[in-house]
Image (cartoon, rainbow, N blue to C red):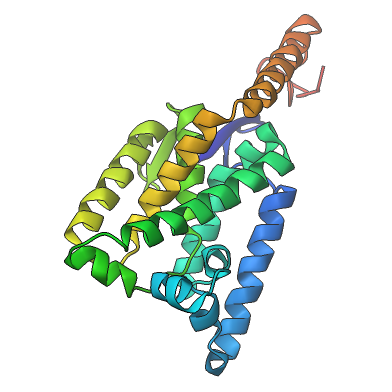
Length: 250
């Protein structure tokens, strides 16, 4: 995401939504700490204990795994991509909803994604059997829930794929959801596509069934409207007007 701001030289660009908000900052720190501990002490078997395995949950009672698997990642690229997506798409949602609601939504999506994986692993067939014996780590399930919420609130916001091709957020989520659906049905690539779909489903059901967030959205949008209205009323221009040689703030 890129935002445009006026500057003395014309138009400047800012990458991303701005500074980390409280919940996202805490989540990033927790994920990084868990990643470092797992990387420095692989013999401790942290991933085996805290990663998600339907077989371990159902047969051995590892009931904490649907929560803890979200904080583990395989490789620097895995955690970097997830934390970058969390920052880019989550910051504005947390500002709009508030930290409490955002945090709750994040964990609902993550745990819901794990629950979907466990439930589907109990179905008959070769793919559910492989799913039952699978091992999943990463915050991707929760991240997909964040993507869904972002697409619902800001459907026409451009998302730059490979930092080049702008795609409206709604189509970005539809495309990636479709890819995950096809990959989960085919059982290919080794990526937890079923978990991704579970995050989308959990996020959708939660937002549909919980209307409390609508009040936060209305307040947020009303506040922005009032601020913009006051700026126009008092002739306020951030950074000065284009025809103002001194670029003062009026």
